[in-house]
Length: 409
Image (cartoon, rainbow, N blue to C red; front, side, top):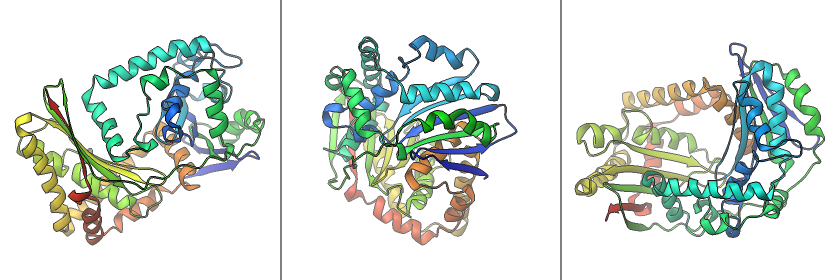
């Protein structure tokens, strides 16, 4: 991994990796600002900002922003998470400078015209309605609310009708002014382009940005209490979500929990939950467990849908699989296979250069460094069966789990 990293005088950092066997360049701005940084009155503002970045800058109108790269076969996109806002693009290498210039413009020069705010407000309200109509999505958001009750981590990234309906031009300006910290901004580039060309296109404009330090400090989460909630909805099958807080981005156990989660209910068809609930009993079409680390805490969850008559049996089987990992250590061959599978998945993910570009940016923001994949592989290889059992006993403890169920009316 030959990475180039440069910090500018204002604190903005540029990370770059050249990949010569592709025609593309992937680049993006990753900002350490997310939905958890909103006040209750600002709920949904970071996501709304993501939308508004495409709606006009000091030198471009919406059409010119949307047409700039798309007409050249490129892609322009953005997303908001609990802790990050990202604006990114993929394009042929000969169009990289246009992509970099456009990303700079929408990230730092958006004007948030009131007329466009009114239009986009309706778009976001429609997006919220779409998610409400998808119980598989809404149960995940509602489990967040249950686990992180009375905390910004539990709020919906999209916001709610009241807040989204109230935002004005000044709300965006005030939020960005409060949150923006030039030392918490990364411009990441992966693709067929040299570092000197990257700097030539973007270093000048970025150096013109005045250094800014934010006084804002994230409010940590320390008040978890397990809860059980049942909601009746107009659905044809029951949905179940089980979850709790977990390890943070800075916890040395995070890679071990990643491995354990992969064994229990990761993306592969041979996960224990899939083999038991789908292949053996036929109770579910899809079941998965997930682990998401944040800067000061994390989240572990399990999601599945089943017929109402098999709900209790399915839930019991999920808890039984967790209990098995608590009580019984993995055998030598089982552990080796689990490690090889996790390492293989990570190696394949590295082939996705757009995703890799975003990973580099987030890693620099979260850890002030980018660990080589080989060092992560070593941490997984060095994990013992005893360590996985200890983590299973901590994280899979049923007394600390919250349970959310959607039942048909």
